[in-house]
Amino acid sequence: MVNAEIRTLVEPDGTPVCNVAFDLSADQLRSAALAIAAVRVERHRGAELETDDVLALRELTGVCDELDRLSDAGGHGTVILPLGRLVALHDALGEWTTGRTDRGWMREDEHEAFPVVHAMLTPLATVRADALQTVLGSTADAPGA
Image (tube, rainbow, N blue to C red; front, side):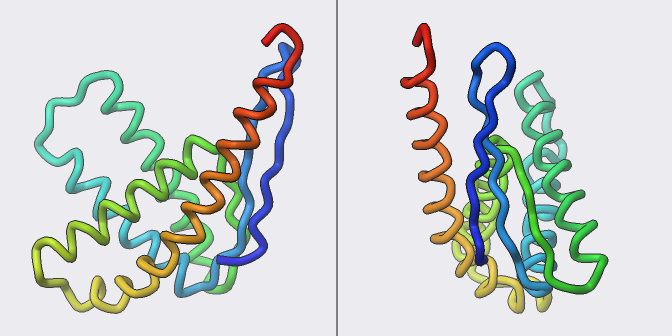
């Protein structure tokens, strides 16, 4: 993950909106897409979904679709995600790596993806923290806050 950039916009009502852009290699895109797809199924398979669960599934599906679209192109790609989807991505990748470590075995494709996904966690955590700080700082500086 390289070239991380936080893009802050302001809604007409003054609410800050944060998008995060970063570049991923073809291997990172493919590995992250595999991990997100697995978490989406594992997390929601056979579960009765409440409204919050449906919204979380929708966010994961959006992230998964974006990663799949970029991965299908076969090259490096720039990922642009709203802050909420970046958080969903980071949480799901962390859940996937922890799940694979805890169960003690991996499928062949997971074995190849694991070190790639694991290496993405720290840079994603840094960008996540910076983006949250940017939004929280923007909220505190907004008129009427």
